[in-house]
Image (tube, rainbow, N blue to C red):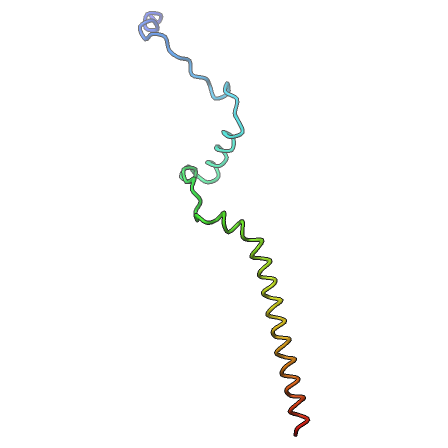
Length: 95
């Protein structure tokens, strides 16, 4: 009787078992990402901020400019102190 029911169902495609299919690196990465972050994070492909790549590209230039700015501020402060010292020395002689 079992043979009759198998014939009536028709030929069935054999599904490969999970162990039979070799796992690619991408599938492994997806599985670990889903396990770590959850499934909702996987669908969010767009970056959180649209200009993140611009910030990354400009970061080195900004660091250089920041250093130059700090050095310029220090030079200005040194000049101001030197000018004030010169004025005090000049006004001290007159008194």
